[in-house]
Amino acid sequence: MKNKFQKITNNFWFDREAEEAVQFYLSVFKDSQMGRTTRYGKEGHEIHGMPEGTVMTIDFVLEGQEFVALNGGPAFQFNEAISLIVNCESQEEVDYYWDKLTEGGDEKAQVCGWLKDKFGVSWQVVPVALNEMLTSGDSEKVAKVTKEFMQMKKIDLPALQRAYEG
Image (cartoon, rainbow, N blue to C red; front, side, top):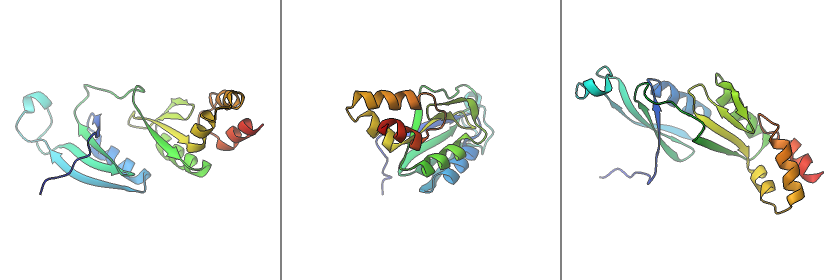
């Protein structure tokens, strides 16, 4: 039987922290699971430089989305040009993901719901209601909400709702 693959899969390039990162993400997202693991062999050592038996890739799933974590060495680093959006239904959910994902992360990278976790991966923790407010078609309300959220680190949904309604 053939393995079925998602058409597009996100690949995270870590130096050597793939296992630690996958375990961290699995602990944060309740609907998650770890999949297959591949390991480096003797072949290609002159290129990859990894000791034989070191984890090469780990497949994992977060909230139904498939990912791959690769231990690829220090050649590439994460940056904010790509981020993962966590759509939240409540302030409680925003608080949960914000608190978990910012733990050990870069405090300087926290702005307007964006954050960098302890592995350098960029995330946006955003209430679904914010998108609804910003696409409401009421330019005055959109301006008030935009002004409000642009000043925030972690999104404060009650404050946005007051700005929208007031």
